[in-house]
Amino acid sequence: MKIVLENLTKIYPNMTKGQPDVHAVDGFNFEIPDGELVGLLGPSGCGKSTTLNLISGLETPTSGKIYFGEDDVTDLPPENRGVGLVFQNYALYPHMTVRENIMFPLGNLKGDKKLSKEVMAEKALEAAKLVQIDSLMDRKPNQMSGGQQQRVAIARALVKMPRVLLLDEPLSNLDARLRLQTREEIRRIQRVTGITTVFVTHDQEEAMSICDRIVVMKDGVVQQIDSPQNVYDYPENLFVAKFLGTPAINVFNGSVKDEKLYIGKEAVLDVKGVEDQDVYVGIRPEGFTLDKNGAFKAKLSRVEVLGRDTSVISFHDACESNPVRSIIPSEDKVDESGEYVRFSLKPFKVHLFSKKDEKRLLFK
Image (cartoon, rainbow, N blue to C red):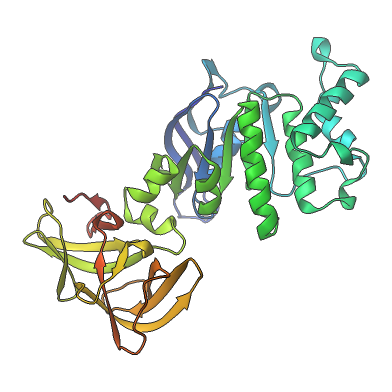
């Protein structure tokens, strides 16, 4: 089911007298193709959950339109939209078994959609098998792990085979290992069912690992929409560059003179096509190559051996995000007896941003 958001806006009145109203979602335009898993990504308060609630019908937009396929569902009640919702806190009924929790949405069907108990039980079992909890049908939520409870919540959302599946930070309450397992399971289920899915998260690693496309949001405004790798490799502005990436991107104050990039007093890279100006320089941790003759020089702090990689921690006066973290292959050995370390830079891992509007500047 294709989802189209057309100039979608949600404004909340500010309860503080004299303060402007809050634009939780501001002019959101986006088309989610049928069968895609799309992540809404951003910090707390950026409008991603509000967008999800608008799609589901739990919130009413101030302006704009929502389409499921060719159908305008903007004013359609949530129960008539054909959506499946999975929340952060599972929202299971504690007095019901797994089977009863999964069957619950089917029991609310009326008229010609009403199902017999046998058919409901069969559909519940199919949904349970899909999320691999069919052996736990007679347990109650308090007899299950957090990951198992989240699978029950997903099965309950899927049992009616919704047109759209909406996931609101479904992994936040799980520990690190369960988060990894469950996000892989969500991706598997989405591929098997082919249901168009919107996944809300503040965790960029989650979004990048399982989504076909991600939407990065800030203060209710869409910053960038693209495939995860393209958003990482080609951030449209400084906010996107800083928000994506673990470890975070290193940000320096720099300048361009005669098509050369300067960080501090040193010319570190040729940047053809960029006019003379002061810039923000973003360098991904993996954008450094250990080089005793390299143009970039920083004061060495320590070396952290990570097994496959080595993390070099250093300091530079021009760095806004000190310390500087550089990731290099483990076979490259750093002379830890020296006061300074030198690197050459990988051009495709270096991003320039305007000091005026923080948008990315392209160079050759």
